[in-house]
Image 1 (cartoon, rainbow, N blue to C red):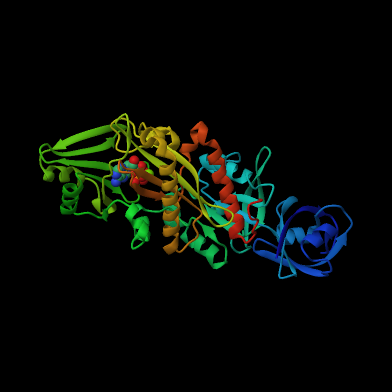
Image 2: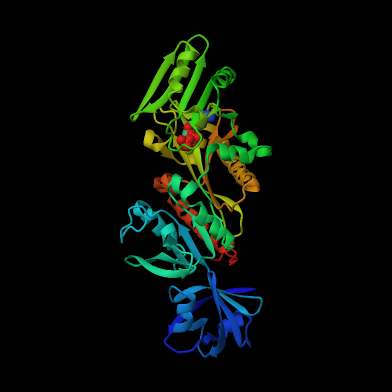
Length: 452
Ligand SMILES: Nc1ncnc2c1ncn2[C@@H]1O[C@H](COP(=O)(O)OP(=O)(O)O)[C@@H](O)[C@H]1O
Ligand SMILES: [Mg+2]
Protein backbone atom coordinates (compact mmCIF):
# COMPACT_ATOMS: atom_id res chain seq x y z
CA UNK A 1 0.00 0.00 0.00
CA UNK A 2 1.45 3.37 -0.89
CA UNK A 3 -0.07 6.65 0.10
CA UNK A 4 0.51 10.07 -1.38
CA UNK A 5 -1.40 13.19 -2.35
CA UNK A 6 -2.62 14.19 -5.78
CA UNK A 7 -4.37 16.96 -7.62
CA UNK A 8 -7.69 15.90 -9.14
CA UNK A 9 -8.89 17.53 -12.37
CA UNK A 10 -12.26 17.00 -13.97
CA UNK A 11 -12.25 16.75 -17.77
CA UNK A 12 -15.05 16.88 -20.34
CA UNK A 13 -13.66 13.84 -22.15
CA UNK A 14 -16.08 11.05 -23.04
CA UNK A 15 -15.42 7.47 -22.04
CA UNK A 16 -14.13 6.22 -18.74
CA UNK A 17 -10.35 6.36 -19.09
CA UNK A 18 -8.59 7.96 -16.16
CA UNK A 19 -5.24 9.69 -16.74
CA UNK A 20 -2.42 9.67 -14.22
CA UNK A 21 0.76 11.68 -14.49
CA UNK A 22 3.98 9.71 -14.50
CA UNK A 23 4.98 10.93 -11.03
CA UNK A 24 1.65 9.80 -9.62
CA UNK A 25 1.99 6.38 -11.20
CA UNK A 26 5.45 6.04 -9.69
CA UNK A 27 4.27 7.16 -6.24
CA UNK A 28 1.44 4.60 -6.37
CA UNK A 29 3.78 1.89 -7.68
CA UNK A 30 1.44 1.42 -10.63
CA UNK A 31 3.84 2.13 -13.48
CA UNK A 32 2.43 -0.34 -15.97
CA UNK A 33 -1.10 -0.95 -14.81
CA UNK A 34 -3.71 -0.87 -17.65
CA UNK A 35 -6.90 -0.94 -15.57
CA UNK A 36 -7.66 -0.21 -11.96
CA UNK A 37 -10.58 -0.12 -9.57
CA UNK A 38 -11.07 3.48 -8.47
CA UNK A 39 -12.65 3.84 -5.04
CA UNK A 40 -14.00 6.77 -3.11
CA UNK A 41 -15.91 6.27 0.12
CA UNK A 42 -18.21 3.29 -0.42
CA UNK A 43 -18.31 3.62 -4.23
CA UNK A 44 -16.03 2.07 -6.81
CA UNK A 45 -15.70 1.45 -10.53
CA UNK A 46 -13.22 -0.22 -12.86
CA UNK A 47 -11.52 2.02 -15.40
CA UNK A 48 -8.79 1.89 -18.00
CA UNK A 49 -5.86 3.96 -16.77
CA UNK A 50 -3.49 5.88 -19.02
CA UNK A 51 -0.45 8.03 -18.60
CA UNK A 52 -0.32 11.76 -19.10
CA UNK A 53 2.74 13.94 -19.55
CA UNK A 54 2.69 16.54 -16.80
CA UNK A 55 4.98 17.48 -13.94
CA UNK A 56 3.69 16.63 -10.47
CA UNK A 57 1.08 14.16 -9.24
CA UNK A 58 -2.12 14.68 -11.21
CA UNK A 59 -5.24 12.67 -11.83
CA UNK A 60 -7.66 13.50 -14.70
CA UNK A 61 -11.16 12.18 -14.28
CA UNK A 62 -13.78 12.16 -17.07
CA UNK A 63 -17.36 13.25 -16.43
CA UNK A 64 -18.77 9.73 -16.53
CA UNK A 65 -16.45 8.50 -13.77
CA UNK A 66 -16.87 11.66 -11.75
CA UNK A 67 -20.66 11.33 -11.78
CA UNK A 68 -20.64 7.63 -11.13
CA UNK A 69 -18.30 7.92 -8.16
CA UNK A 70 -19.83 11.15 -6.86
CA UNK A 71 -16.45 12.83 -6.47
CA UNK A 72 -17.44 16.05 -4.71
CA UNK A 73 -14.67 18.39 -5.81
CA UNK A 74 -11.45 18.70 -7.80
CA UNK A 75 -8.15 19.69 -6.19
CA UNK A 76 -5.97 18.14 -3.58
CA UNK A 77 -6.70 14.89 -1.73
CA UNK A 78 -4.98 11.77 -0.49
CA UNK A 79 -4.64 8.86 -2.84
CA UNK A 80 -3.38 5.35 -2.20
CA UNK A 81 -3.03 2.12 -4.08
CA UNK A 82 -4.29 -1.03 -2.43
CA UNK A 83 -3.52 -4.63 -3.53
CA UNK A 84 -1.67 -3.27 -6.58
CA UNK A 85 -4.85 -2.76 -8.65
CA UNK A 86 -7.02 -0.46 -6.61
CA UNK A 87 -6.76 3.31 -6.30
CA UNK A 88 -8.46 4.86 -3.33
CA UNK A 89 -9.20 8.59 -3.21
CA UNK A 90 -10.15 10.51 -0.14
CA UNK A 91 -10.76 9.72 2.48
CA UNK A 92 -14.43 10.68 2.70
CA UNK A 93 -14.97 11.83 6.28
CA UNK A 94 -18.40 12.84 7.57
CA UNK A 95 -19.18 14.69 10.75
CA UNK A 96 -22.66 13.64 11.87
CA UNK A 97 -24.43 16.44 13.69
CA UNK A 98 -27.83 17.94 14.34
CA UNK A 99 -29.71 20.07 11.85
CA UNK A 100 -32.49 21.52 13.99
CA UNK A 101 -33.04 25.14 12.88
CA UNK A 102 -31.27 24.65 9.56
CA UNK A 103 -30.73 27.79 7.46
CA UNK A 104 -28.46 28.20 4.41
CA UNK A 105 -25.87 30.11 6.41
CA UNK A 106 -26.24 27.90 9.51
CA UNK A 107 -27.03 24.40 8.20
CA UNK A 108 -26.41 22.93 11.65
CA UNK A 109 -28.01 25.64 13.76
CA UNK A 110 -25.83 27.24 16.37
CA UNK A 111 -23.18 24.53 16.25
CA UNK A 112 -22.44 25.55 12.60
CA UNK A 113 -19.45 27.80 13.40
CA UNK A 114 -17.83 24.98 15.40
CA UNK A 115 -18.43 22.45 12.62
CA UNK A 116 -16.92 24.96 10.21
CA UNK A 117 -13.78 25.05 12.39
CA UNK A 118 -13.53 21.25 12.41
CA UNK A 119 -13.83 21.07 8.63
CA UNK A 120 -11.30 23.82 7.99
CA UNK A 121 -8.51 21.57 9.28
CA UNK A 122 -8.94 19.02 6.48
CA UNK A 123 -11.08 20.63 3.77
CA UNK A 124 -8.15 20.90 1.36
CA UNK A 125 -6.70 17.49 2.19
CA UNK A 126 -9.64 15.08 2.06
CA UNK A 127 -13.38 15.04 1.32
CA UNK A 128 -14.35 16.35 4.72
CA UNK A 129 -17.96 17.37 5.23
CA UNK A 130 -20.79 17.52 7.74
CA UNK A 131 -24.27 16.07 7.55
CA UNK A 132 -27.27 15.17 9.62
CA UNK A 133 -29.42 12.05 9.60
CA UNK A 134 -31.90 13.44 7.07
CA UNK A 135 -29.09 14.05 4.55
CA UNK A 136 -28.39 10.32 4.13
CA UNK A 137 -29.84 8.47 1.13
CA UNK A 138 -29.39 4.78 1.98
CA UNK A 139 -30.92 3.55 -1.32
CA UNK A 140 -28.41 5.49 -3.41
CA UNK A 141 -25.64 4.97 -0.84
CA UNK A 142 -24.96 8.71 -0.86
CA UNK A 143 -25.02 11.65 1.50
CA UNK A 144 -25.97 15.19 0.64
CA UNK A 145 -23.15 16.73 2.62
CA UNK A 146 -22.18 20.27 3.55
CA UNK A 147 -18.67 21.33 2.58
CA UNK A 148 -17.11 24.60 3.57
CA UNK A 149 -16.46 27.19 0.91
CA UNK A 150 -14.88 30.60 1.10
CA UNK A 151 -18.19 32.29 1.74
CA UNK A 152 -19.76 29.64 3.97
CA UNK A 153 -21.21 26.31 2.87
CA UNK A 154 -21.79 24.34 -0.33
CA UNK A 155 -23.89 21.24 -0.63
CA UNK A 156 -22.58 18.27 -2.61
CA UNK A 157 -23.57 14.66 -3.02
CA UNK A 158 -20.90 12.24 -1.83
CA UNK A 159 -20.70 8.47 -1.48
CA UNK A 160 -21.30 7.01 1.98
CA UNK A 161 -18.13 7.96 3.85
CA UNK A 162 -15.09 5.98 4.95
CA UNK A 163 -15.57 7.12 8.55
CA UNK A 164 -18.11 9.03 10.62
CA UNK A 165 -17.40 11.29 13.59
CA UNK A 166 -20.52 11.51 15.72
CA UNK A 167 -21.13 15.05 16.94
CA UNK A 168 -24.92 14.85 17.39
CA UNK A 169 -25.85 17.45 19.95
CA UNK A 170 -29.14 16.14 21.28
CA UNK A 171 -29.03 13.38 23.88
CA UNK A 172 -32.46 12.19 22.83
CA UNK A 173 -31.59 11.93 19.13
CA UNK A 174 -28.19 10.42 19.92
CA UNK A 175 -29.45 7.76 22.27
CA UNK A 176 -32.69 6.68 20.57
CA UNK A 177 -33.71 8.24 17.25
CA UNK A 178 -30.39 7.83 15.49
CA UNK A 179 -29.53 4.30 16.57
CA UNK A 180 -30.83 2.55 13.44
CA UNK A 181 -28.84 4.85 11.18
CA UNK A 182 -25.70 4.47 13.24
CA UNK A 183 -26.06 0.69 13.20
CA UNK A 184 -26.47 0.84 9.45
CA UNK A 185 -23.10 2.56 9.12
CA UNK A 186 -21.51 -0.21 11.14
CA UNK A 187 -23.23 -2.90 9.01
CA UNK A 188 -21.79 -1.19 5.92
CA UNK A 189 -18.31 -1.49 7.44
CA UNK A 190 -18.10 2.24 8.14
CA UNK A 191 -16.40 2.99 11.45
CA UNK A 192 -18.19 5.58 13.53
CA UNK A 193 -16.44 7.10 16.49
CA UNK A 194 -18.01 8.44 19.65
CA UNK A 195 -21.09 6.31 19.32
CA UNK A 196 -23.22 8.31 21.76
CA UNK A 197 -23.36 10.40 24.89
CA UNK A 198 -22.27 8.64 28.05
CA UNK A 199 -24.20 8.47 31.27
CA UNK A 200 -22.06 8.76 34.37
CA UNK A 201 -22.95 5.23 35.44
CA UNK A 202 -22.10 3.82 31.95
CA UNK A 203 -18.55 5.03 32.39
CA UNK A 204 -18.28 3.75 35.95
CA UNK A 205 -19.48 0.35 34.71
CA UNK A 206 -16.92 0.29 31.91
CA UNK A 207 -14.21 0.84 34.53
CA UNK A 208 -15.51 -1.83 36.92
CA UNK A 209 -12.89 -4.45 37.63
CA UNK A 210 -10.16 -2.35 35.98
CA UNK A 211 -7.29 -1.03 38.12
CA UNK A 212 -8.25 2.49 36.99
CA UNK A 213 -11.57 2.25 38.85
CA UNK A 214 -9.66 3.50 41.89
CA UNK A 215 -9.82 6.98 40.36
CA UNK A 216 -13.63 7.05 40.56
CA UNK A 217 -15.02 8.15 43.93
CA UNK A 218 -17.23 5.48 45.55
CA UNK A 219 -20.58 5.67 43.74
CA UNK A 220 -23.94 3.90 43.93
CA UNK A 221 -26.79 4.06 41.45
CA UNK A 222 -30.45 4.43 42.39
CA UNK A 223 -29.60 4.93 46.07
CA UNK A 224 -32.26 4.17 48.71
CA UNK A 225 -32.34 6.60 51.68
CA UNK A 226 -30.34 4.19 53.87
CA UNK A 227 -27.53 4.21 51.33
CA UNK A 228 -27.40 8.00 51.23
CA UNK A 229 -27.35 8.06 55.04
CA UNK A 230 -24.60 5.44 55.25
CA UNK A 231 -22.50 7.29 52.65
CA UNK A 232 -22.93 10.54 54.62
CA UNK A 233 -21.76 8.84 57.78
CA UNK A 234 -18.80 7.35 55.97
CA UNK A 235 -17.67 10.46 54.07
CA UNK A 236 -19.45 13.46 55.71
CA UNK A 237 -19.85 14.97 52.22
CA UNK A 238 -21.55 13.27 49.28
CA UNK A 239 -22.76 14.36 45.87
CA UNK A 240 -26.10 13.34 44.44
CA UNK A 241 -25.97 13.60 40.67
CA UNK A 242 -28.39 12.68 37.88
CA UNK A 243 -26.59 9.95 35.93
CA UNK A 244 -27.62 11.47 32.59
CA UNK A 245 -27.08 15.06 33.69
CA UNK A 246 -24.72 17.79 32.55
CA UNK A 247 -23.77 21.38 33.34
CA UNK A 248 -24.28 20.80 37.06
CA UNK A 249 -28.06 20.54 36.60
CA UNK A 250 -29.87 18.66 39.36
CA UNK A 251 -26.75 18.16 41.52
CA UNK A 252 -27.00 18.24 45.34
CA UNK A 253 -24.04 18.45 47.66
CA UNK A 254 -24.92 16.98 51.07
CA UNK A 255 -22.90 17.38 54.24
CA UNK A 256 -23.40 15.80 57.64
CA UNK A 257 -22.00 17.32 60.81
CA UNK A 258 -23.05 15.30 63.87
CA UNK A 259 -23.39 18.40 66.05
CA UNK A 260 -25.20 20.57 63.47
CA UNK A 261 -27.20 18.24 61.28
CA UNK A 262 -27.52 17.90 57.52
CA UNK A 263 -26.67 20.58 54.96
CA UNK A 264 -27.85 20.53 51.39
CA UNK A 265 -26.47 22.78 48.68
CA UNK A 266 -27.89 23.06 45.17
CA UNK A 267 -28.73 25.56 42.48
CA UNK A 268 -32.26 26.84 41.96
CA UNK A 269 -33.43 29.57 39.55
CA UNK A 270 -29.88 30.68 38.89
CA UNK A 271 -29.00 31.02 42.59
CA UNK A 272 -27.04 28.89 45.03
CA UNK A 273 -29.21 27.58 47.85
CA UNK A 274 -28.05 26.21 51.21
CA UNK A 275 -30.54 24.45 53.50
CA UNK A 276 -30.03 22.86 56.90
CA UNK A 277 -32.04 19.97 58.36
CA UNK A 278 -31.95 18.59 61.88
CA UNK A 279 -33.15 15.22 60.80
CA UNK A 280 -32.22 12.99 57.91
CA UNK A 281 -35.92 12.23 57.25
CA UNK A 282 -36.47 15.94 56.46
CA UNK A 283 -33.57 15.99 54.05
CA UNK A 284 -34.94 12.93 52.28
CA UNK A 285 -38.32 14.61 51.90
CA UNK A 286 -36.63 17.33 49.89
CA UNK A 287 -34.53 14.92 47.85
CA UNK A 288 -37.48 12.70 47.06
CA UNK A 289 -38.90 15.45 44.89
CA UNK A 290 -36.33 14.18 42.39
CA UNK A 291 -36.53 10.80 40.78
CA UNK A 292 -33.62 9.31 42.71
CA UNK A 293 -33.76 6.18 40.55
CA UNK A 294 -31.88 8.18 37.94
CA UNK A 295 -29.33 9.47 40.43
CA UNK A 296 -26.02 8.30 41.79
CA UNK A 297 -24.74 9.04 45.26
CA UNK A 298 -21.02 9.69 45.25
CA UNK A 299 -18.28 10.14 47.83
CA UNK A 300 -17.48 13.86 48.10
CA UNK A 301 -13.88 14.78 47.39
CA UNK A 302 -12.16 17.63 49.22
CA UNK A 303 -10.72 19.36 46.19
CA UNK A 304 -7.78 21.74 46.28
CA UNK A 305 -9.06 25.29 46.70
CA UNK A 306 -8.10 28.86 45.91
CA UNK A 307 -9.74 31.57 48.03
CA UNK A 308 -11.96 28.86 49.56
CA UNK A 309 -13.32 27.96 46.14
CA UNK A 310 -12.79 24.37 44.93
CA UNK A 311 -10.85 23.79 41.72
CA UNK A 312 -11.17 20.99 39.21
CA UNK A 313 -9.83 20.31 35.75
CA UNK A 314 -11.13 19.55 32.29
CA UNK A 315 -8.90 17.12 30.42
CA UNK A 316 -9.84 17.10 26.75
CA UNK A 317 -8.47 13.83 25.43
CA UNK A 318 -8.11 12.92 21.75
CA UNK A 319 -6.90 9.97 19.76
CA UNK A 320 -4.22 11.09 17.31
CA UNK A 321 -3.24 9.90 13.83
CA UNK A 322 -1.44 6.85 15.20
CA UNK A 323 -4.31 5.75 17.44
CA UNK A 324 -2.83 6.98 20.71
CA UNK A 325 -4.56 9.05 23.39
CA UNK A 326 -3.19 12.51 24.04
CA UNK A 327 -4.25 15.14 26.59
CA UNK A 328 -4.84 17.78 23.93
CA UNK A 329 -6.39 20.53 26.03
CA UNK A 330 -6.35 21.08 29.79
CA UNK A 331 -8.21 23.81 31.63
CA UNK A 332 -8.64 24.51 35.34
CA UNK A 333 -11.99 25.66 36.68
CA UNK A 334 -12.54 27.49 39.93
CA UNK A 335 -16.01 27.22 41.42
CA UNK A 336 -18.08 30.35 41.92
CA UNK A 337 -18.62 31.34 45.55
CA UNK A 338 -21.17 29.02 47.17
CA UNK A 339 -21.52 26.95 44.02
CA UNK A 340 -21.66 23.15 44.15
CA UNK A 341 -19.87 22.80 40.82
CA UNK A 342 -17.15 24.60 38.87
CA UNK A 343 -19.23 25.35 35.77
CA UNK A 344 -18.54 28.76 34.30
CA UNK A 345 -22.29 29.22 33.85
CA UNK A 346 -22.62 28.92 37.63
CA UNK A 347 -20.10 31.67 38.32
CA UNK A 348 -16.97 29.55 37.84
CA UNK A 349 -13.72 30.94 36.51
CA UNK A 350 -11.35 29.57 33.92
CA UNK A 351 -7.63 29.29 34.69
CA UNK A 352 -4.62 27.50 33.27
CA UNK A 353 -3.65 24.29 35.08
CA UNK A 354 -0.09 25.58 35.52
CA UNK A 355 -1.20 28.69 37.37
CA UNK A 356 -3.41 26.70 39.74
CA UNK A 357 -1.00 23.86 40.38
CA UNK A 358 1.99 26.09 41.01
CA UNK A 359 -0.01 28.00 43.55
CA UNK A 360 -0.88 24.83 45.33
CA UNK A 361 2.08 22.52 44.78
CA UNK A 362 4.87 25.05 44.13
CA UNK A 363 7.94 23.45 42.57
CA UNK A 364 6.16 20.15 42.21
CA UNK A 365 3.40 21.55 39.97
CA UNK A 366 4.88 20.05 36.78
CA UNK A 367 5.19 16.66 38.34
CA UNK A 368 1.57 16.70 39.52
CA UNK A 369 0.37 17.78 36.07
CA UNK A 370 2.37 15.02 34.37
CA UNK A 371 1.03 12.46 36.82
CA UNK A 372 -2.54 13.61 36.16
CA UNK A 373 -1.99 13.43 32.39
CA UNK A 374 -0.80 9.83 32.77
CA UNK A 375 -3.87 8.97 34.79
CA UNK A 376 -6.11 10.58 32.16
CA UNK A 377 -4.48 8.52 29.41
CA UNK A 378 -4.84 5.33 31.44
CA UNK A 379 -8.50 6.13 32.08
CA UNK A 380 -9.10 6.52 28.33
CA UNK A 381 -7.41 3.22 27.60
CA UNK A 382 -9.38 1.48 30.33
CA UNK A 383 -12.75 2.88 29.18
CA UNK A 384 -11.95 1.92 25.62
CA UNK A 385 -11.04 -1.66 26.52
CA UNK A 386 -14.61 -2.79 27.14
CA UNK A 387 -16.41 -0.22 25.01
CA UNK A 388 -17.76 -1.89 21.86
CA UNK A 389 -17.33 1.18 19.59
CA UNK A 390 -14.48 3.40 18.48
CA UNK A 391 -13.71 6.32 20.76
CA UNK A 392 -11.71 9.28 19.51
CA UNK A 393 -12.45 11.99 22.00
CA UNK A 394 -13.28 12.25 25.70
CA UNK A 395 -13.63 15.14 28.12
CA UNK A 396 -12.86 14.26 31.72
CA UNK A 397 -13.82 16.28 34.76
CA UNK A 398 -10.92 15.51 37.06
CA UNK A 399 -10.31 16.61 40.62
CA UNK A 400 -7.16 16.61 42.72
CA UNK A 401 -7.52 16.43 46.50
CA UNK A 402 -5.25 17.92 49.15
CA UNK A 403 -3.34 14.64 49.43
CA UNK A 404 -2.64 14.78 45.71
CA UNK A 405 -4.98 11.92 44.90
CA UNK A 406 -6.56 12.14 41.47
CA UNK A 407 -10.31 11.61 40.97
CA UNK A 408 -12.43 11.35 37.84
CA UNK A 409 -16.01 12.65 38.18
CA UNK A 410 -17.25 12.13 34.67
CA UNK A 411 -16.27 11.39 31.09
CA UNK A 412 -18.02 13.33 28.33
CA UNK A 413 -18.20 11.78 24.87
CA UNK A 414 -19.10 15.19 23.40
CA UNK A 415 -16.85 17.46 25.39
CA UNK A 416 -17.81 21.12 25.42
CA UNK A 417 -15.25 23.67 24.31
CA UNK A 418 -15.73 26.48 26.80
CA UNK A 419 -12.17 26.16 28.20
CA UNK A 420 -10.84 27.38 24.84
CA UNK A 421 -12.23 30.83 25.54
CA UNK A 422 -9.15 31.28 27.71
CA UNK A 423 -6.58 33.12 25.57
CA UNK A 424 -3.79 30.79 26.69
CA UNK A 425 -5.70 27.66 25.68
CA UNK A 426 -6.56 28.64 22.09
CA UNK A 427 -3.70 26.64 20.55
CA UNK A 428 -4.78 23.57 22.47
CA UNK A 429 -8.31 24.10 21.15
CA UNK A 430 -6.93 24.03 17.61
CA UNK A 431 -4.96 20.86 18.42
CA UNK A 432 -8.13 19.01 19.40
CA UNK A 433 -9.64 19.74 15.96
CA UNK A 434 -6.50 18.50 14.23
CA UNK A 435 -6.55 15.27 16.19
CA UNK A 436 -10.13 14.55 15.16
CA UNK A 437 -9.16 14.87 11.51
CA UNK A 438 -6.01 12.77 11.87
CA UNK A 439 -7.78 10.05 13.83
CA UNK A 440 -10.40 9.98 11.04
CA UNK A 441 -7.58 9.40 8.55
CA UNK A 442 -6.33 6.58 10.74
CA UNK A 443 -9.77 4.93 11.00
CA UNK A 444 -10.30 5.16 7.27
CA UNK A 445 -6.99 3.37 6.70
CA UNK A 446 -5.22 6.37 5.26
CA UNK A 447 -2.20 6.06 7.53
CA UNK A 448 -0.56 9.41 7.07
CA UNK A 449 1.60 9.10 10.22
CA UNK A 450 1.76 12.61 11.52
CA UNK A 451 2.45 14.54 8.31
CA UNK A 452 -1.20 15.27 7.49
N1 LIG B 1 -17.79 13.51 44.12
C1 LIG B 1 -17.48 14.78 44.00
N2 LIG B 1 -16.66 15.40 44.90
C2 LIG B 1 -16.32 16.71 44.76
N3 LIG B 1 -16.75 17.50 43.75
C3 LIG B 1 -17.57 16.94 42.83
C4 LIG B 1 -17.97 15.57 42.90
N4 LIG B 1 -18.78 15.30 41.87
C5 LIG B 1 -18.88 16.44 41.17
N5 LIG B 1 -18.18 17.43 41.72
C6 LIG B 1 -18.05 18.82 41.24
O1 LIG B 1 -19.18 19.11 40.45
C7 LIG B 1 -18.83 19.30 39.09
C8 LIG B 1 -19.90 18.71 38.20
O2 LIG B 1 -19.95 17.31 38.36
P1 LIG B 1 -20.03 16.34 37.13
O3 LIG B 1 -19.97 14.96 37.66
O4 LIG B 1 -19.02 16.73 36.13
O5 LIG B 1 -21.52 16.62 36.61
P2 LIG B 1 -22.09 17.43 35.33
O6 LIG B 1 -22.48 16.37 34.36
O7 LIG B 1 -23.27 18.17 35.81
O8 LIG B 1 -20.98 18.30 34.80
C9 LIG B 1 -17.47 18.65 38.95
O9 LIG B 1 -16.76 19.23 37.89
C10 LIG B 1 -16.86 18.95 40.32
O10 LIG B 1 -16.40 20.26 40.39
MG1 LIG C 1 -19.09 17.80 34.30
